[in-house]
Length: 278
Image 1: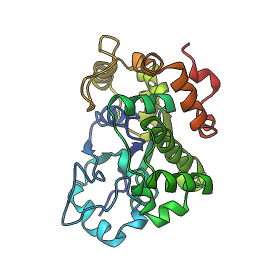
Image 2 (image 1 turned 180 degrees about the vertical axis):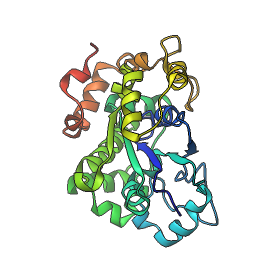
Image 3 (image 1 turned 120 degrees about the vertical axis):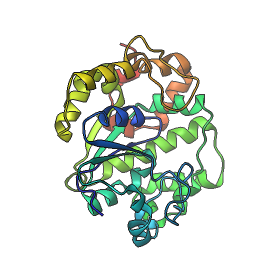
Image 4 (image 1 turned 30 degrees about the vertical axis):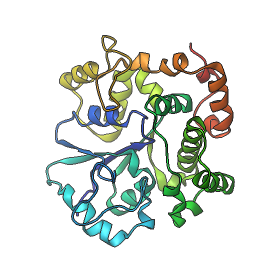
């Protein structure tokens, strides 16, 4: 199957991948595909069901995955597929190696990520990681130990979210740069300056930018939109205000906990200034 010119937009969930994916899919000749690796929303495709959430392709039946699971994408020779899927993060190197897809990876500030999971009361079962031995071997030993403990002993939601962020972005940071060649994007940078930042992404991905695209992105992220939604799905929001939501929702004690629990990984992507409203 030919996916040579496709794009994968990934990162952690709640990191703005839907917003970024939909904005990039505004380009002519691009078809948007919603989370093909999400076993909850796409439980079975072409007779194959992924074994785990955040599945690692090399812990799956890779040959079956190759022949059946991705078959439903059925790309047209005249279109570029844009796969929006945070759940495909740990399979992104495999997708890149197998199909030559360009990977765009979003990073969200740990406090923003944790705040969002707390709001929606989303918890995570770390057994999804421990049941994938190849993936577990790719984690740093100290993080692997934490995952094993959290898989057995349920922790408070804030601690779960902190470990999940640390697992995801330590793994991304440890990927070999030569092999990765990903386009890394901080959610906060997109939110602060949507138009210049998306223009930059369009150039890097060789997508066509025009006035219609710019107008649609402004509709998605303009200051006339609310900062938050009563729906965890995608809705147009005030992108600049979204950057500040966690600072108003979390207590000083919670912010300090998040900073401590995600250290030193947050320092790979953010500075101390990013923990303050400026």
